[in-house]
Length: 72
Image (cartoon, rainbow, N blue to C red; front, side):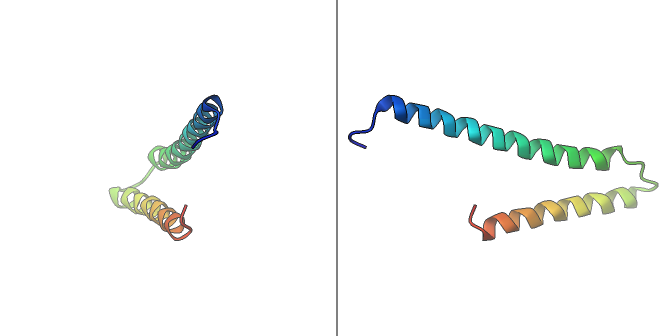
C-alpha cells in the first residue's frame, strides 16, 4: 500500500463504514416493519399467528438463499 495517502485511506474507510451502517439500518428497519405487521394483526387463533410467522420465516430464508447464490 505504498504511495497511498493515509488521509485518503482513512476517508475511504470511514465512507465504507457509513455505507455499511446505513445498509444495515435499512435492512433492520425493513424486517422490523414486516414483523410488526404480523404482530399487530388480529389473529383469530394461535395457529393463524404461527402460520403467518412461518410465511415470514420462509421469506427471510428465501432472501438469504438468493443472497448466497448471487455471492453478495
